[in-house]
Length: 392
Ligand code: NAD
Image 1 (cartoon, protein in one colour):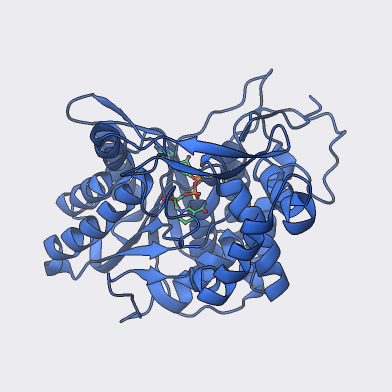
Image 2 (tube, protein in one colour):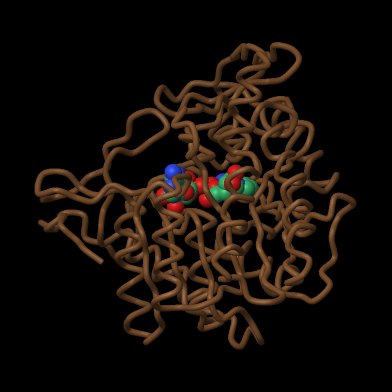
C-alpha cells in the first residue's frame, strides 16, 4: 500500500508506519542528546502513552532514565486495507526501539476508564514490573463510560457563562472567519468534568494503592493547559477549563489520601502544541500558528519532547519542586509571559484572510500536524509500497 495523508477537517484518517517510526526516533534521539539526566523513576505507568505528551513522557522515562514502562492507550490496529492509527504505529516503533535498547516495555490497548483495563494493568504490574514510582495521566478523550453505571458522558468545547464570538481559522477551507460559540449549559459543564476532570485519575491511584502497587514516595501528574486571555474564553474559563480545575481538586485529594506512602500528585501545566487533541479545539489552530511564529522568533519554541524532558528534570522529579499558588508545576512560562502574549495579541488583532500566511507560522503548524500522522518527514519515502500490518 502506498500511503498518502487523508485529511478530513481537523483529523487525518490514516497514518504512515515508517513516518511514525521516524518521528518517535527523532524524539528518542533528542532525549539521548541531553546526556545523563541523573536519578529518575524505575517503573512508570503511562496512561495515554501513544501520542502527544503521553508518548513524550514514555520516551523520556525510557531513554532518559532507563525506566521500565507499562503504557495504556486506545488505538486502532491496522487491517490489510486500512492503516492503523498513528498511536498504534508510534507504539510499535517505541517497542522496537526500547527492545533494541534492552529496556522493558509493555502496552495495553483498551479503555483506560474501564474497571477491566485497570484490573489488567494490576495483573500486568504484579507479574512483570512490581510497584510503580511514577504514574503519568495523559488521557485526552471526547467521551468516557462511567465504569460503575455504564453511562456514556461526552465532553464539549464551549464557553461558560456567555456566548463568545471570536476569530478562527478553518484549516480545510484555508479561511479566517468569525465563529459564535454558544455557552454551555450546566449539564454540558458537568459532563465535560466527568470526562476530562480528575475522577478517573483518582480511581487509578486508588486501584493501584489497593493492590499495593504504589512505591513509597511515588509521584503522579496529570497534564493541563492554562493559557492566557486569548484562549481563556474557549479553554481556561470554558468547559474544558472547568474539567481541568477539577484536576487541582483531585491532585490534593490523591496526595491527602495516600499520605502514608508519601505519594505526591501534581497537575503540570504545559504549553499549547499541535496534537490530535488540540487540533480539535476551535480557535487553537489559529492561536498555535501565531505562537509558533512568535516563539520561533524568540528562540523559545518547544515540542512535546522538550517540554516533558524539562518537566521531569526541572520539576516533577525534584524533591521539593517549585510550584505555583495552586501547587501546580508550570512549564508554560515561555508562552504565557506578558511580553510574549503581547506580541501574540498584536498579531491576533491584525490577522486577516489576506495576511494570515504572512503573519502566522501556519506552514509550521501544518507540518507538525501532518507529522503527527507520520507524514511530511524528511528522509521518508512516501512512494514506497508498504505493508500496513505492523504489530508490537
Ligand atoms: P493526544 O490526543 O495526543 O493523546 C491522548 C492519549 O490518550 C493517546 O495516547 C490516546 O490513545 C489516549 N486515550 C484516549 N482515550 C483513551 C481511553 N479511553 N483509554 C486509553 N487511552 C486513551 O493528546 P495530548 O494533546 O497529548 O493531551 C494529553 C494531555 O495533555 C491532556 O490532558 C491535554 O489536555 C494535556 N495538554 C495538552 C496540550 C496541547 O496543546 N496539546 C497542552 C497542555 C496540556
